[in-house]
Image (cartoon, rainbow, N blue to C red):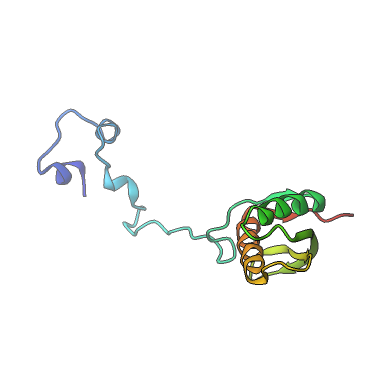
Length: 131
């Protein structure tokens, strides 16, 4: 297919480069010598949809998790958040959260806050391994 096929008639005095700058793509440029379509490059299944995560220290992740959990209504009874290094290939993270509470808290609300915070933070952060 040439530029004349796209317009329905020949384009006089214009090169493929000029036609492309006008928003017309010369399809002949998208083919190999044998007119087979170019091979598509696809990401490895592990990296499909992957975004880079920030590497964070354990103390910083604990502080952020505590702030986010305590921001939920009914989570005033949360006293401490501990982050532990644990690789989880399914969730694509290398940490988990342990939460400690005082008596009298609504455990259903606290569990909801923990799960929501864990989901939110696991997409943003990976734990820095201490060496």
